[in-house]
Length: 410
Image (cartoon, rainbow, N blue to C red; front, side):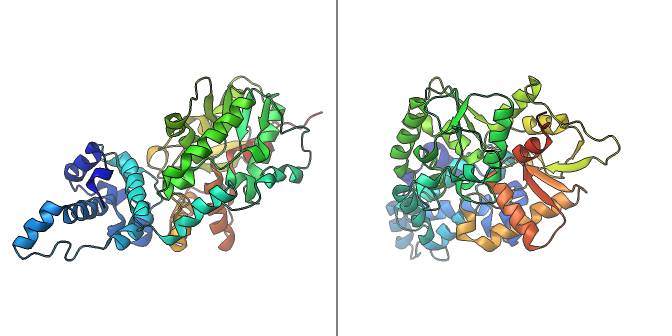
């Protein structure tokens, strides 16, 4: 572990931590595992010790007093396991009273651990899949748009040579059967609004976000160059995403590698909110005699804390006839993580499931019958938990609910 691998501000953060315990109180992994060792506070202290013990000056100084450096401290492999048992939800950074840049620090710690062979072995499969098949599931990338065949009334020519808007589907939405309903729904909405759009089919590669979470950002350059070139080849001025992680890496990382001038990057909820404001969508009127559909909204970590998109999804829900929104105890900036981020399911599936359980239980406490979110990964983790435990809840992406509420053509 090299101190030089971290920026000055990151190294300063190790001493700036006041040990107030706020991050420990909000960490969903700590609560789900009942293990304070997973908190940002403890990880910062461990990192500080590891960097000190691997500094030659301090090693020699401690040894001169008969002290064995690192005695009682975790090994790098043990520390690596702890660092990767995190969903990168970002709530520790959100609540930190000192404003420490914790999320970027965790990503850089993962990069340093992976570079030196101390990341969990499973993470290597992510790079192999993306370099070999250009998607995180190691499926045939020529089948990335096969979900179109499962649409009841699939529009013609969804993969076009040119359009104003490119819909970047993402790996989960393209390949995971449960999540494929989300791109189907967004396509239905865009067609209903008369939007000039296209998907890229096999020309779309994984956005590369899983590489960040696995500590392997050095493999991003080719992926980013390819995706940006394919979007520009279609003369698009806007890229829309249903996956918050895809949106976040395009906004925060892609500009370091490619020129995105002239490209507007938006989440589907932002686009649909605009369509609702412009009255470009026609919704079926609710039956005044029927009970309203009571829903609660889950803010995905990467869309809410990551991209600061909080109000647009709620604006849409309030505009839907026959829908009543109730909020969970934790929502907005401090929404509980569903357990689906940071490659956590790969590293510790039991912890991921425990986090999903806390999220679903909080949703149940509202009395809502439907959990609505705006992330295919959140839909997947929560739906999996709901189905396994036979709970009387429905989990939907917002695009699915909007598509269901559209007025049928005469």
